[in-house]
Amino acid sequence: MARRFTGSFTQQEPLPADAIAAAVAVLQSGRLHRYNLVSGEPGEVAQLEAEYRDWQGSAYCLAVTSGGQALQIALRACGVRPGDGVLTNAFTLAPVPGAISAVGGNAVLVEIDETLRLDLDALEARIASSGARVLLLSHMRGHLCDMDRLMRLCDGAGVTVIEDCAHTMGARWNKTRSGNFGKVACFSTQTYKHMNSGEGGFLTTDDAAIAAQATILSGSYMMYARHGAGPAPEAFVDARYDMPNCSARMDALRAAILRPQLAQLDGNVERWNLRYRAVEAGLKTHSRITTIPLPKEELHVGSSIQFRLPGFSADQCRALMDAAKARGVELKWFGAAEPVGFTSAHPSWRYVATQDLPQTDRILATLFDMRLPLSFSEADCTLIADLIRDAVDEVAP
Ligand SMILES: *Cc1c(COP(=O)(O)O)cnc(C)c1O
Image 1: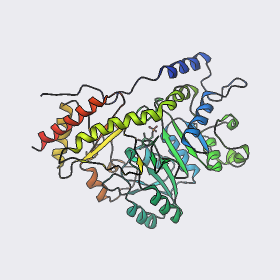
Image 2: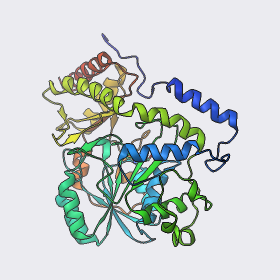
Image 3: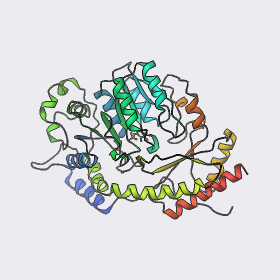
Image 4: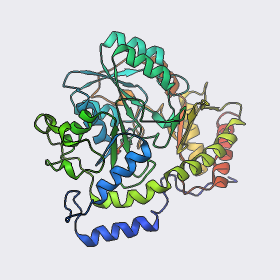
């Protein structure tokens, strides 16, 4: 075989030198717990919360152990109780239905359309048929719905929107940051997302009562006055008694390595998009490959790329995975019958009631997905697109 890519699709960049220095300082202090502060010391976690709040443009921010914990806390703070239906995307990743199940909710899966976004007509119908009053909206792979229409629809129907921004940290719809549309937004700082603390996450909101409930849920041991971007003490009058401690606090070490990364985030969005455009341009020249449209209202963050091969059979899709792999290109295929790696489709979520989603299933059957870590150069991305085209030609000459 002529050409092969030799980079790793799971290799992130090293952490910035100032993040490493900040981590060493925390380790030397021995004070890793967010509330273990000496007098007058704000602490890394509180400072990070204030900085993330300012960057996001929300009123409040809470740092937590993971994006999945942020989702669970958000669902509880929005009043989801065991047995309640929670609307969500039929195409998303396992932490989303997982969070709904963890709080005892029943996921009501909503069809996606060919752009991988929630089908808003299907959403309207499911709101009416299910009676569910919370939508956990997954901005899956960075593709934002028409947020103006979505919010009109949900506000009109009395549906509370929780935004899962695991893939849209830094993205915007009509200039408004993703996460500032719904009641609460959840972010992940897990290694494969847009900032890297191994594990970690944020919850942001403009609602003081929800911020207070979320803080107590995160396990604040009544130390909420030590938070950096929380509501005033009055907001905790009931929450401090009503909410259980679910121990999901962020620690000082992770906060210390995230603060310097936040300063680089907007620049990194640009770097991801250069890589995205390089792959997209290459894929667009192939007649069989369908790329995913990015609406002009959307400022996308291209940390991964998706494409479809309409008309490909399951055998051809499997063959494409192999042909790409032989060229060093690691694709994920959402049509696989078995969950592999980070990829699973709704039929694999046995803890969720089986639901009939023919439109989503048809789209997932020929949907491919690929990570674009910043460790790749633009030239790498151009090569990868060439190799995918070659692989498609090998499978379907
Ligand atoms: C990664 C991810 C999450 C949650 O993140 P963790 O920090 O791994 O818990 C939530 N939603 C989606 C779509 C994700 O990909």
